[in-house]
Length: 348
Ligand code: TLP
Image 1 (cartoon, helix red, strand yellow):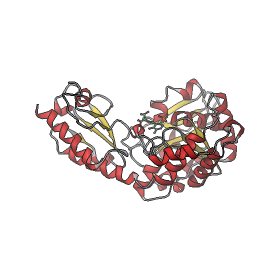
Image 2: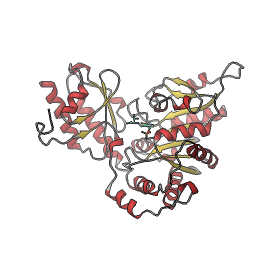
Image 3: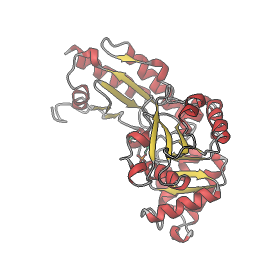
Image 4: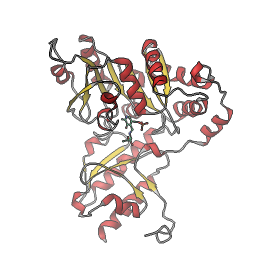
Protein backbone atom coordinates (compact mmCIF):
# COMPACT_ATOMS: atom_id res chain seq x y z
CA UNK A 1 0.00 0.00 0.00
CA UNK A 2 1.42 3.38 -0.87
CA UNK A 3 1.22 6.54 1.21
CA UNK A 4 -1.75 7.83 -0.79
CA UNK A 5 -3.82 4.76 -0.08
CA UNK A 6 -2.94 5.08 3.57
CA UNK A 7 -4.47 8.52 3.50
CA UNK A 8 -2.87 11.08 5.80
CA UNK A 9 -2.22 8.63 8.60
CA UNK A 10 0.38 10.03 10.95
CA UNK A 11 3.63 8.13 11.08
CA UNK A 12 4.05 6.81 14.62
CA UNK A 13 7.70 5.95 15.12
CA UNK A 14 8.20 3.75 18.17
CA UNK A 15 11.52 2.21 17.06
CA UNK A 16 13.68 4.16 19.47
CA UNK A 17 14.05 7.40 21.41
CA UNK A 18 17.07 8.01 19.17
CA UNK A 19 14.70 9.28 16.45
CA UNK A 20 13.88 12.44 18.42
CA UNK A 21 14.69 15.66 16.59
CA UNK A 22 16.27 18.73 18.21
CA UNK A 23 13.89 21.22 19.81
CA UNK A 24 13.47 24.78 18.56
CA UNK A 25 15.40 26.00 21.57
CA UNK A 26 18.29 23.74 20.54
CA UNK A 27 18.34 25.14 17.00
CA UNK A 28 18.40 28.67 18.45
CA UNK A 29 21.20 27.66 20.82
CA UNK A 30 23.25 26.42 17.84
CA UNK A 31 22.92 29.82 16.16
CA UNK A 32 24.11 31.63 19.26
CA UNK A 33 26.83 29.18 20.33
CA UNK A 34 30.30 30.57 20.95
CA UNK A 35 32.74 28.34 19.12
CA UNK A 36 36.43 27.43 19.14
CA UNK A 37 38.73 24.50 18.37
CA UNK A 38 37.91 21.81 20.89
CA UNK A 39 41.04 19.78 20.12
CA UNK A 40 42.86 22.76 21.67
CA UNK A 41 40.28 22.75 24.48
CA UNK A 42 39.12 26.16 23.21
CA UNK A 43 35.44 25.67 22.47
CA UNK A 44 33.70 27.58 25.28
CA UNK A 45 30.36 25.85 24.64
CA UNK A 46 31.88 22.36 24.83
CA UNK A 47 33.69 23.35 28.02
CA UNK A 48 30.45 24.64 29.50
CA UNK A 49 28.62 21.41 28.64
CA UNK A 50 31.39 19.26 30.11
CA UNK A 51 31.40 21.25 33.34
CA UNK A 52 27.62 21.03 33.54
CA UNK A 53 27.65 17.26 32.96
CA UNK A 54 30.37 16.62 35.53
CA UNK A 55 28.49 18.70 38.10
CA UNK A 56 25.19 16.94 37.37
CA UNK A 57 26.80 13.52 37.76
CA UNK A 58 28.82 14.49 40.85
CA UNK A 59 32.10 13.69 39.09
CA UNK A 60 35.36 15.62 38.70
CA UNK A 61 35.24 15.88 34.92
CA UNK A 62 33.36 14.99 31.75
CA UNK A 63 34.13 14.58 28.06
CA UNK A 64 31.87 15.08 25.05
CA UNK A 65 32.12 12.23 22.54
CA UNK A 66 30.33 11.37 19.34
CA UNK A 67 28.05 8.50 20.42
CA UNK A 68 27.13 6.09 23.16
CA UNK A 69 29.15 3.35 21.50
CA UNK A 70 32.22 5.57 21.39
CA UNK A 71 31.65 6.58 25.02
CA UNK A 72 31.62 2.94 26.11
CA UNK A 73 34.67 2.03 24.07
CA UNK A 74 36.75 4.99 25.28
CA UNK A 75 35.74 4.29 28.87
CA UNK A 76 36.84 0.66 28.55
CA UNK A 77 40.14 1.75 27.02
CA UNK A 78 40.69 4.26 29.81
CA UNK A 79 39.76 1.94 32.67
CA UNK A 80 41.44 -1.33 31.68
CA UNK A 81 44.56 -3.00 30.29
CA UNK A 82 44.54 -5.23 27.21
CA UNK A 83 44.17 -8.89 28.10
CA UNK A 84 41.96 -8.27 31.11
CA UNK A 85 38.59 -9.88 31.60
CA UNK A 86 35.62 -7.63 32.28
CA UNK A 87 32.33 -8.52 33.94
CA UNK A 88 29.30 -7.62 31.81
CA UNK A 89 25.63 -8.50 31.95
CA UNK A 90 24.87 -11.10 29.28
CA UNK A 91 22.42 -8.89 27.39
CA UNK A 92 24.09 -5.52 27.85
CA UNK A 93 24.49 -3.13 24.94
CA UNK A 94 28.29 -3.09 25.10
CA UNK A 95 28.43 -6.84 24.65
CA UNK A 96 25.45 -7.29 22.36
CA UNK A 97 25.38 -4.33 20.02
CA UNK A 98 28.78 -2.69 19.84
CA UNK A 99 30.38 -4.74 17.09
CA UNK A 100 32.70 -6.48 19.55
CA UNK A 101 34.78 -3.30 19.99
CA UNK A 102 35.65 -4.32 23.53
CA UNK A 103 37.66 -7.24 22.12
CA UNK A 104 38.54 -6.04 18.63
CA UNK A 105 39.84 -2.65 19.78
CA UNK A 106 40.26 -2.68 23.57
CA UNK A 107 41.66 -6.23 23.70
CA UNK A 108 39.31 -7.30 26.50
CA UNK A 109 37.67 -10.61 27.20
CA UNK A 110 34.04 -10.25 28.24
CA UNK A 111 32.74 -12.48 31.02
CA UNK A 112 28.97 -12.32 30.49
CA UNK A 113 26.75 -13.04 33.48
CA UNK A 114 22.99 -13.40 33.36
CA UNK A 115 21.30 -10.69 35.38
CA UNK A 116 17.81 -10.39 36.80
CA UNK A 117 15.96 -7.65 34.93
CA UNK A 118 19.35 -6.25 33.99
CA UNK A 119 20.83 -6.25 37.50
CA UNK A 120 23.56 -8.59 38.65
CA UNK A 121 23.72 -9.09 42.42
CA UNK A 122 27.20 -8.54 43.91
CA UNK A 123 27.35 -12.10 45.28
CA UNK A 124 26.83 -13.42 41.77
CA UNK A 125 29.55 -11.17 40.35
CA UNK A 126 31.94 -12.07 43.17
CA UNK A 127 31.77 -15.74 42.23
CA UNK A 128 32.96 -14.88 38.72
CA UNK A 129 35.97 -12.77 39.65
CA UNK A 130 39.26 -14.39 38.69
CA UNK A 131 41.54 -15.61 41.43
CA UNK A 132 45.26 -15.04 41.12
CA UNK A 133 46.35 -17.93 38.94
CA UNK A 134 48.96 -18.17 36.20
CA UNK A 135 46.32 -19.47 33.78
CA UNK A 136 43.66 -16.81 34.16
CA UNK A 137 43.18 -13.40 32.57
CA UNK A 138 42.84 -11.01 35.49
CA UNK A 139 39.45 -9.35 36.08
CA UNK A 140 39.87 -5.65 35.38
CA UNK A 141 36.44 -4.03 35.51
CA UNK A 142 32.80 -4.52 36.44
CA UNK A 143 30.13 -3.01 34.16
CA UNK A 144 26.43 -2.36 34.64
CA UNK A 145 23.79 -0.82 32.35
CA UNK A 146 21.10 1.51 33.70
CA UNK A 147 18.43 1.57 32.40
CA UNK A 148 18.96 -1.86 30.91
CA UNK A 149 17.85 -1.78 27.30
CA UNK A 150 17.37 -5.45 26.43
CA UNK A 151 15.90 -6.26 29.82
CA UNK A 152 13.07 -3.86 28.93
CA UNK A 153 14.32 -0.44 30.04
CA UNK A 154 14.49 -1.71 33.61
CA UNK A 155 16.06 0.35 36.37
CA UNK A 156 18.81 -0.44 38.84
CA UNK A 157 18.27 1.45 42.09
CA UNK A 158 21.00 3.51 43.80
CA UNK A 159 20.95 0.96 46.65
CA UNK A 160 21.52 -1.96 44.29
CA UNK A 161 24.28 -0.09 42.54
CA UNK A 162 25.97 0.82 45.80
CA UNK A 163 26.06 -2.84 46.80
CA UNK A 164 27.94 -3.66 43.61
CA UNK A 165 30.18 -0.62 44.08
CA UNK A 166 31.10 -1.63 47.64
CA UNK A 167 31.84 -5.18 46.55
CA UNK A 168 33.97 -3.87 43.66
CA UNK A 169 35.97 -1.67 46.04
CA UNK A 170 36.56 -4.70 48.27
CA UNK A 171 38.33 -6.26 45.29
CA UNK A 172 40.03 -3.09 44.17
CA UNK A 173 38.02 -3.03 40.93
CA UNK A 174 36.41 -0.04 39.22
CA UNK A 175 32.68 0.01 38.46
CA UNK A 176 31.64 1.46 35.10
CA UNK A 177 28.04 2.24 34.17
CA UNK A 178 26.58 2.48 30.68
CA UNK A 179 24.04 5.10 31.68
CA UNK A 180 22.85 5.87 28.14
CA UNK A 181 19.41 6.39 29.74
CA UNK A 182 20.46 7.14 33.32
CA UNK A 183 18.11 10.14 33.44
CA UNK A 184 15.20 7.79 32.69
CA UNK A 185 16.28 5.71 35.67
CA UNK A 186 16.59 8.78 37.91
CA UNK A 187 13.20 10.14 36.86
CA UNK A 188 11.49 6.75 37.32
CA UNK A 189 12.99 6.37 40.80
CA UNK A 190 12.50 10.03 41.79
CA UNK A 191 16.16 10.28 42.62
CA UNK A 192 19.18 12.38 41.65
CA UNK A 193 21.63 10.95 39.10
CA UNK A 194 24.42 11.66 41.59
CA UNK A 195 23.06 8.88 43.78
CA UNK A 196 24.14 6.16 41.34
CA UNK A 197 27.54 5.34 42.79
CA UNK A 198 30.26 4.29 40.37
CA UNK A 199 33.76 5.23 39.25
CA UNK A 200 32.77 6.29 35.77
CA UNK A 201 29.59 6.60 33.75
CA UNK A 202 28.44 7.64 30.31
CA UNK A 203 25.09 9.06 29.32
CA UNK A 204 23.57 9.93 25.93
CA UNK A 205 22.24 13.32 24.87
CA UNK A 206 20.68 11.97 21.70
CA UNK A 207 18.07 9.59 23.05
CA UNK A 208 15.12 10.73 25.19
CA UNK A 209 16.83 14.08 25.82
CA UNK A 210 16.36 14.94 22.12
CA UNK A 211 19.75 16.40 21.25
CA UNK A 212 20.91 15.49 17.74
CA UNK A 213 24.36 14.10 18.57
CA UNK A 214 26.61 13.24 21.47
CA UNK A 215 27.27 11.43 24.70
CA UNK A 216 29.26 12.36 27.79
CA UNK A 217 31.64 10.27 29.79
CA UNK A 218 32.04 11.32 33.39
CA UNK A 219 34.56 10.36 36.07
CA UNK A 220 37.85 11.42 37.66
CA UNK A 221 40.21 13.95 36.00
CA UNK A 222 42.67 11.18 35.35
CA UNK A 223 40.05 8.94 33.71
CA UNK A 224 38.82 11.75 31.47
CA UNK A 225 42.37 12.67 30.43
CA UNK A 226 43.04 9.07 29.43
CA UNK A 227 39.74 8.85 27.56
CA UNK A 228 40.52 12.11 25.74
CA UNK A 229 43.79 10.69 24.45
CA UNK A 230 41.97 7.58 23.17
CA UNK A 231 39.25 9.75 21.62
CA UNK A 232 41.95 11.51 19.59
CA UNK A 233 43.54 8.18 18.66
CA UNK A 234 40.24 6.91 17.31
CA UNK A 235 39.58 10.05 15.30
CA UNK A 236 36.94 11.40 17.63
CA UNK A 237 38.63 14.75 18.33
CA UNK A 238 36.18 17.37 17.09
CA UNK A 239 36.80 21.00 16.23
CA UNK A 240 33.91 23.50 16.58
CA UNK A 241 31.85 20.93 18.49
CA UNK A 242 30.08 23.74 20.30
CA UNK A 243 27.25 23.44 17.79
CA UNK A 244 26.60 19.98 19.23
CA UNK A 245 27.34 20.99 22.80
CA UNK A 246 24.86 23.88 22.62
CA UNK A 247 22.05 21.36 22.11
CA UNK A 248 23.46 19.19 24.89
CA UNK A 249 23.21 22.04 27.37
CA UNK A 250 19.57 22.63 26.47
CA UNK A 251 18.98 18.86 26.73
CA UNK A 252 20.37 18.60 30.25
CA UNK A 253 18.77 21.81 31.47
CA UNK A 254 15.29 21.41 30.02
CA UNK A 255 14.56 17.90 28.78
CA UNK A 256 15.00 15.69 31.84
CA UNK A 257 11.76 16.20 33.75
CA UNK A 258 9.58 15.53 30.70
CA UNK A 259 10.88 11.93 30.53
CA UNK A 260 8.14 11.16 33.08
CA UNK A 261 5.64 11.73 30.27
CA UNK A 262 7.38 9.10 28.12
CA UNK A 263 7.18 6.69 31.04
CA UNK A 264 3.45 7.32 31.46
CA UNK A 265 2.91 6.74 27.73
CA UNK A 266 4.91 3.49 27.83
CA UNK A 267 2.78 2.27 30.72
CA UNK A 268 -0.39 3.17 28.83
CA UNK A 269 0.86 1.40 25.72
CA UNK A 270 1.73 -1.72 27.72
CA UNK A 271 -1.67 -1.79 29.39
CA UNK A 272 -3.48 -1.36 26.10
CA UNK A 273 -1.37 -4.02 24.37
CA UNK A 274 -1.95 -6.52 27.13
CA UNK A 275 -5.71 -6.20 26.44
CA UNK A 276 -5.23 -7.50 22.91
CA UNK A 277 -5.70 -11.24 22.44
CA UNK A 278 -2.51 -12.77 21.11
CA UNK A 279 -0.14 -10.17 22.57
CA UNK A 280 1.67 -10.68 25.84
CA UNK A 281 3.51 -8.07 27.85
CA UNK A 282 5.60 -8.57 30.95
CA UNK A 283 4.27 -5.57 32.87
CA UNK A 284 6.89 -5.90 35.60
CA UNK A 285 9.53 -4.86 33.08
CA UNK A 286 7.73 -1.75 31.93
CA UNK A 287 9.55 0.68 34.21
CA UNK A 288 10.63 3.54 31.95
CA UNK A 289 10.08 4.34 28.26
CA UNK A 290 10.25 0.87 26.71
CA UNK A 291 7.69 -1.85 26.07
CA UNK A 292 8.77 -5.29 24.91
CA UNK A 293 5.89 -7.46 23.79
CA UNK A 294 5.44 -10.87 22.22
CA UNK A 295 3.22 -11.00 19.16
CA UNK A 296 3.33 -14.77 18.65
CA UNK A 297 -0.33 -15.33 19.50
CA UNK A 298 -1.49 -12.87 16.85
CA UNK A 299 -0.71 -15.33 14.08
CA UNK A 300 0.73 -12.55 11.89
CA UNK A 301 3.82 -13.78 10.04
CA UNK A 302 5.76 -10.51 10.04
CA UNK A 303 4.20 -8.14 12.54
CA UNK A 304 6.82 -5.40 12.06
CA UNK A 305 6.51 -5.15 8.29
CA UNK A 306 2.70 -5.38 8.46
CA UNK A 307 2.64 -2.53 10.95
CA UNK A 308 5.07 -0.44 8.95
CA UNK A 309 2.54 -0.57 6.10
CA UNK A 310 0.20 1.02 8.62
CA UNK A 311 2.78 3.67 9.43
CA UNK A 312 3.56 2.39 12.91
CA UNK A 313 7.22 1.52 13.36
CA UNK A 314 8.69 -0.88 15.93
CA UNK A 315 12.08 -2.53 16.47
CA UNK A 316 12.54 -6.25 16.02
CA UNK A 317 13.82 -8.44 18.80
CA UNK A 318 14.17 -12.23 19.02
CA UNK A 319 11.52 -14.27 17.22
CA UNK A 320 8.13 -12.65 17.58
CA UNK A 321 9.24 -10.19 20.27
CA UNK A 322 8.93 -6.50 19.43
CA UNK A 323 10.24 -3.36 21.14
CA UNK A 324 8.40 -0.04 21.34
CA UNK A 325 10.04 3.06 22.79
CA UNK A 326 8.15 6.22 23.74
CA UNK A 327 9.75 9.63 23.39
CA UNK A 328 9.13 13.32 22.74
CA UNK A 329 6.79 13.55 19.75
CA UNK A 330 4.74 10.54 20.83
CA UNK A 331 1.65 11.78 22.63
CA UNK A 332 -1.01 9.82 24.49
CA UNK A 333 -3.23 10.03 21.38
CA UNK A 334 -0.46 8.48 19.27
CA UNK A 335 -0.22 5.57 21.67
CA UNK A 336 -3.94 4.96 21.44
CA UNK A 337 -3.86 5.36 17.65
CA UNK A 338 -0.99 2.84 17.36
CA UNK A 339 -3.02 0.36 19.42
CA UNK A 340 -6.05 0.92 17.16
CA UNK A 341 -3.95 0.17 14.09
CA UNK A 342 -2.71 -3.07 15.70
CA UNK A 343 -6.29 -4.07 16.46
CA UNK A 344 -7.24 -3.38 12.84
CA UNK A 345 -4.42 -5.62 11.68
CA UNK A 346 -5.64 -8.45 13.84
CA UNK A 347 -9.25 -8.44 12.78
CA UNK A 348 -8.37 -8.51 9.07
N1 TLP B 1 20.82 1.81 21.66
C1 TLP B 1 20.05 1.82 20.44
C2 TLP B 1 20.38 0.63 19.55
O1 TLP B 1 21.75 0.49 19.36
C3 TLP B 1 19.85 -0.67 20.06
C4 TLP B 1 18.57 1.86 20.76
O2 TLP B 1 17.81 2.13 19.83
O3 TLP B 1 18.20 1.61 21.92
N2 TLP B 1 24.09 1.94 25.48
C5 TLP B 1 22.78 1.66 25.47
C6 TLP B 1 22.13 1.13 26.69
C7 TLP B 1 22.03 1.90 24.31
O4 TLP B 1 20.73 1.60 24.31
C8 TLP B 1 22.66 2.44 23.17
C9 TLP B 1 21.90 2.67 21.88
C10 TLP B 1 24.04 2.70 23.24
C11 TLP B 1 24.73 2.43 24.41
C12 TLP B 1 24.82 3.22 22.06
O5 TLP B 1 24.49 4.52 21.74
P1 TLP B 1 24.78 5.10 20.26
O6 TLP B 1 23.65 4.62 19.40
O7 TLP B 1 24.78 6.58 20.46
O8 TLP B 1 26.10 4.59 19.82
